[in-house]
Each structure stands twice: as C-alpha cells, then as structure tokens.
Amino acid sequence: MESIYILITGIIVILAISDLIVGVSNDAVNFLNSALGSKVISFKNIMILASFGVALGALSSSGMMEIARKGIFNPGVFFFDEIMIIFLSVMITDILILDTFNSWGIPTSTTVSIVFELLGAAVIMSLIKIISSDSATDINIFINTEKASQIIIGILLSIFVAFSIGAFIQWISRLILSFNFEDKSLYLNSIIGSLSFSSIINFILIKGIKGSPYSSETYDFLGGLTINNFIDNNILQFWMISLFIWYILSIILIKIFRIDIYKIIIALGTFSLALAFAGNDLVNFIGVPIAALESYNGWVASGVNANEFSMSILADKVQPKPIYLFVSGLIMVVTIWYSSKAKNVVKTSLDLSNQNIVDEKFNSNIIGVFLVNIGRGLNNIFIKLAPKSLLNQIEKSFNTNNVEVFSSSEDRPSFDKLRASLNLVIAAILISLATSYKLPLSTTYVTFMVAMGTSLSDRAWGKESAVYRVSGVVNVIGGWFLTAFSAFCVCGLIVFLIHIGKTVAIIALIIVSAAIIYRNHVLFKKKGEIKI
Image (cartoon, rainbow, N blue to C red; front, top):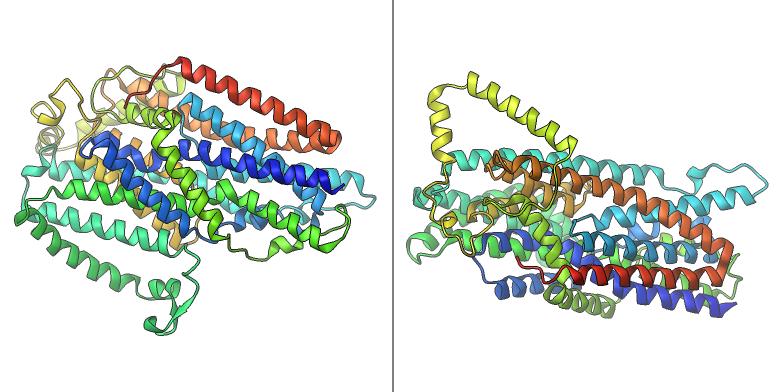
C-alpha cells in the first residue's frame, strides 16, 4: 500500500518542477513588462535585475505556504489518502491550465488558479465523504468558506481598483508633465523621483522583508520588536523621512551627476516586483508539494493506515527547508532567461499598451465595441462641459507629434519612461497597501490592469486601435474568469476520477496531461520566435 503513496509523492515533486517553469513563464509579465516596454535598459541588464530579484525573493520566501495547507480547506477533517488525491489533482490541473494560457500568450493569475484548484478538489472530496457517510454533514466543516470568500472578493476587486487608479494617476501625471517631461523643472522631476523611490522601497520592505521568515523574530537593535512590528509602528515616520531623503538625492542625481532618474526608477521597480513575486507567489508553485511531502513523512512516522491518519498536522505552521527555496529560485531564474512562452505572455501585454500602431492580436467583440462607444460618449460630454482653456492644456500635454521617442520607425519603445515608471510605482503601492491590510489580491491582475489603465489615459488606444485594444483586455479578463471556472471544475473532475480509478486513473491522467502539454508545445513552436 505504501508504494502507491511513494509514487504519488514522487509525481507531485516532479510536477512541482514543471509548475515552477510554467508559472514563472506566466508571471514574468508582472516584473518585465515596464522595463521591456520602455527599452531604456538593455534586455541583458533587465534579465540580470530580474534574476537577482527572483533569487533573493525565493531565498526569503514567506510563510505564505499556509494557503496550500489550510487557507481553503480544513485539513483536520481529511485523511492522508484523501489529502494526497487533492494535492496530486491540484498539481496536474495547475500545469495544464498555466501551460495552456502561456501558449495562448494570455497572462493569468497563478494565485487564482491555485485557490480555485484547491477549492474544487476539496469540495469534490468533501462531497464524496458526505455521500459515503451515514450521517448528514455540513460542507462548511470541510471548507474554509470565510477565508476562501475573502480571497476571491479581494482578487476580483483588485481588477477594477488597479485599472481606475492607474488611469487616474497617469492622466494627472501626464497633464502636469506632458510627454516632454524631461524638459520640466528639476524640482518637479525630483518630486516624481522622491515619490517613486519611497514607494518602491516601502514596497520592498512590506512585500519583501515582512514576508520573510526572519520578520517574526525579535531583535535587540529594534528594541525587542519583530521586523513586522517595527515597520507597522513606524510606517508614517518612515514615509516622511524617506520622501525627504529621496527628494534631496533625486536633485543631486539629476543636477550634479546628470543621471536619468526615470531609468533608475524602472530598474529598481523591476527588481522589487521580481523580488516580491518570488518571495510571495512561490507558494503557488511549491506550497502544495511541500505540504504533500510533510503529509507523507507524517503518515509514514505514524504507522497508521492511510485512510485513518488525520491530516491535522497541516494546521501547524511550516518553514520550508532552505534547499527547497534555493532550488526553486534557481529554476525560476533559468526559466525567465530561456522561456519563449514568457516572452509570448509579455508581448500580449506590450501590444495592448503600445503607444504606436501595431498588428493587433485580438479581433473586436461586442463588449469591446460597447465599452468604446460608452467611453467616446463620456468623452464628448466632457468636451462640451470643460472650459476651453483646460481642453487646450490637455491637448498640449497629450500631444505626441513632436516626441522624439515615438518618431523613429525602428526599435521604438512601446511607451515612454514616465508611463513605465508609473506602472511600476502604482503597482507597488497597491500591492504593498493590500499586504499591509492583509487583503488578498493577484499581482498579475494588479500589474496588468494598472498597465491598461495608464494606456487608456495616455491615449495609446486611439481611434483606430481602441476597439481592438479594449476587446483584447476584455478577452484577457474573460480568460481570468475562465481560469477560475476551469481550475475548479477540472481539478474536481480529476479528484473524482482518481477516487474511482486509483492507480490506473493516475497513470492515465499523467499520460493525457503529458500529451496535452506536448501538443501545446508543438503548436507554440509553429508560431516561430517571439520578438519583443
């Protein structure tokens, strides 16, 4: 009997490696989009920055592993044989879904996929237990409905909040700075530098350091406080001091050293988002395998039958072994350097936010046409009501006719340095705020929707391209809902099949999954090399 669980555990570990590869290929858009789109940093240097961020983030990965252990379901009501079916089903489903979306070039959320896979698997396994039980049992005993609902609502809300705030801040910034922002006052650009650097550093502290395993330990030099408590108690003072220091440094960098401050913002922002991704989203790839290994070790040590060993041990906190984090970080770094599918996903985001005319990837759809017509109607109302002096100032600020960066026909950037910087800063602020208030969200949704909001404000969606761009965004958002639905249904189905077919079903599912992934790979190769 033990041999079957050795097989399942081995399969889960192997799938974890594949999941890291497909997961990073999807999430690379989060931290590569702005740097690659602005083209102010060479591709090699961008990848080096991202690699350092990913490696450091992985080594300081947080205790977010709890989501795979008890965030969605109550482990104590499941037995070892049931929990292993759940974990195996989740890993198979996750790879299939993420690889499919990568092949399509559509960024999706690894957080949403893992949450709904765990939810679908736990619900079906709970129903199986309820049906086979003689006594009536409430499904709420098995599912952590409050936590699951909080995660789902937070993720959905982040879509609209990120788009709206991104659009608003970009519009105000462009109105003040225009596309000729580098010719503006030294002090005005220094204010942008101060706000940007302070936001990014704060983001690294909250999303990076606060999520590390060392953040809950007390230190004498902090007055006996933990890092988390020290940051929480001094966050306002940190902001005030940070804004002042970075304002002075920005003036010095621009005036004395003649350094392009926007280039530094983009570099630091890329590093910080890469660090946060690896440090906090790593759970989406190795949380389940680590929980499976711990479950297997606990069961073997217990000497109890697999169908009698309660998984209450998963309710305890776990700190992943450093070797797991090191290997995971290494795999992720190699993936972002060599994954063609990562470039495919990034290209979709860049094309939808491009300031120039491109070959549109998406066709128009009814929803896109409807939204564009509403937008044009609202814009016409604004033109009629707004003072003429304001309209003239808006036209002057948003005029790109004489902007040199968009005049070259070869190797033009998708957008300028100001928009790239704001994409990174706004995303960093939103994610760090949500983290500080313990609100769950998807980093992919936030970074993508911020980029789309800033594109709208920058008039990247022109008269000819608006319908196609908006339709493309609608398709991507539709894909996100498809991710949740398919993750829930497919994972639930796999749980049922394994429960019925046991070892035969496991082998058959692995063969079918390998065939699907191979087919995706062949079809993707036929598209040729992706250039961004």
